[in-house]
Image 1: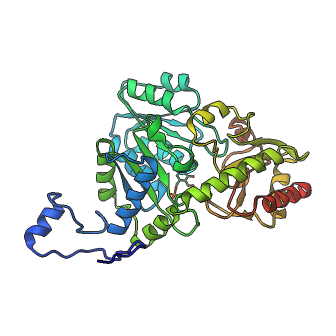
Image 2 (image 1 turned 90 degrees about the vertical axis):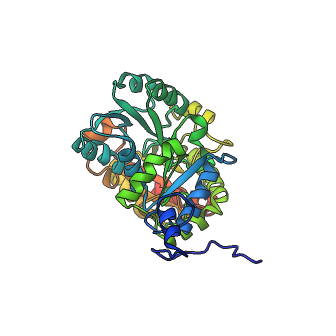
Image 3 (image 1 turned 180 degrees about the vertical axis):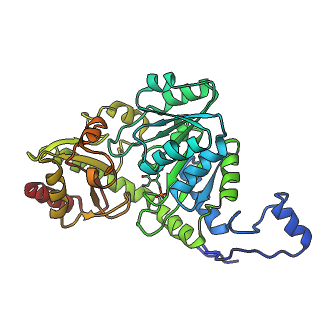
Length: 378
Ligand SMILES: Cc1ncc(COP(=O)(O)O)c(C=O)c1O
């Protein structure tokens, strides 16, 4: 018997059955199989299973749910696990879309939110209430690249009967596996490192049946299912995840180190640098001496300098998103954090000339030369 080596794309929203009873049993969950692609699709399921293997190799009890986007995975996780009257603790510097869910949408549903510095475990503990059901964290935050102490957060959360949910988009399982550090659920925007080619949008939630069950129910009812063609692209991206991220981490370390020496640079943030406030935490939690593919650079000449730096780049592209094979740059104050004026930026620890660089897989020496000449021009 021969089988396809590549993942078949099952481009069908509906499935047929031999008998009416088969249909009823599969839909009722009494027999395995597929009925309707919003509920389950073979291509999307294959992608999710592959991510579960990356996050928890060798663990049969860890499964994953595929989503149409990272935000679909995050919103289904919050709505699946929280109800009116509950309380969640989340990082003040979390991704903007997640911040919007926490600050706008959850309050509309009567769910309390405390936004705190997730790297300050004492502050997280102090924010606990009797109704805290979830502590939410990001493995690496944007753009400060802060790294919370996940095992310490797990102790705080579990001691209060709450779950620890970790958005690990910026790390990828190549850099960190939060389930090994006490997390109950791991979320990803698969649009980033997992897919890796900036050609597909998706998300995924990973955990045991106990924690994943409510997320699956929310996915089915809210409808944020992953399309089969996107699932194919994301699954194909996973085949090179290790290779890509290894290269991205090596190049990011080199660039962070070298760019720190340019006279036009006020500060470089990268968890791999000993100057990073959570370097010790990152060294303890991250795998194989890898520290991720993102660095932030504060250009000394401020906002105009940050913009001029971006404009002078030739190899690195001015572009949205992160984690793909292409190196990309964004000027933080005018893009992801454009709503903040200079005073608010300063309060958040973001310099007006700060740029975020997502390091791709190009020749690192070529990247360094490009970044260096752009710094000269800024
Ligand atoms: C850390 C993080 N989480 C979640 C998301 C949302 O993912 P998506 O755009 O796939 O919905 C993003 C997007 O940039 C992100 O950076």
